[in-house]
Length: 281
Ligand code: GLU
Image 1: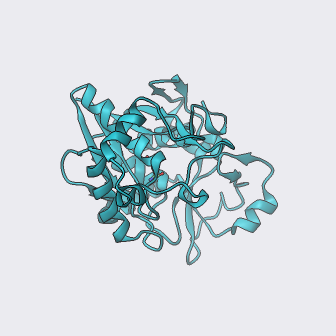
Image 2 (image 1 turned 60 degrees about the vertical axis):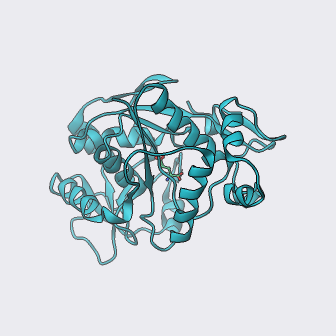
Image 3 (image 1 turned 90 degrees about the horizontal axis):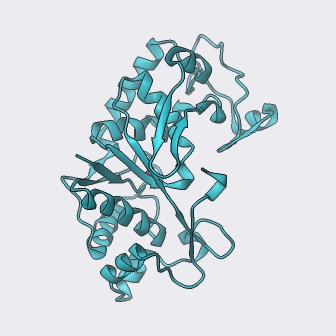
């Protein structure tokens, strides 16, 4: 059975771009007789706010998108993330690092999808200093797994190239896990067979595919959908003045009509769908 998900982070309100993501994930599941799950990515305790979660539930209901089962919360799964971190440490694939952003920017010679690529300064560090983050030695990890492939429904088969990110942080010094580790473990735990998310995260799937191989997790198919963009081509976001779904709901707009308009790819004036944000795929 196909299982999709919508995985918002409660560090701000949902906007039209999120509604589009939720409609796509919901409809892909329902068209194929599957299940649609909701996961609240509230791992970042400092930025997550419970009041947004309440709004998310109301927004989805207003859009007519009901999810199967209980919503999952990352904040309830910290032990699982720590356990996977210990497993990767025991495999000798993680190393501690306390480099600051400024140090990395100064030493980096390449720019990756998330900014300067970590130059490997601490790669051979044996002892973990207080307050270190833990990075994945991506080259050692790929040597262990051998070549990997993954499948995006739209873009087709992809050779996994997690090296484009350099040695990513998996256990953050301030948080129990990074997005990459938490999302990969959660998609497996939630039985997600079709990972539905925006094109801006297309390249993250290279890292997730590697983590699946290292941690013996099932391998889903991916569906990276287009992103709603502003007239200047930038991703739609509340901070640029697009009204949130909660604003629209309170203003008396009809959620079902908005969901149907998004399905038909009818967007408010000035907003369009980009299939290739940041040059991917
Ligand atoms: N929590 C992420 C976001 O709100 C989505 C992550 C994912 O779908 O993998 O952008």
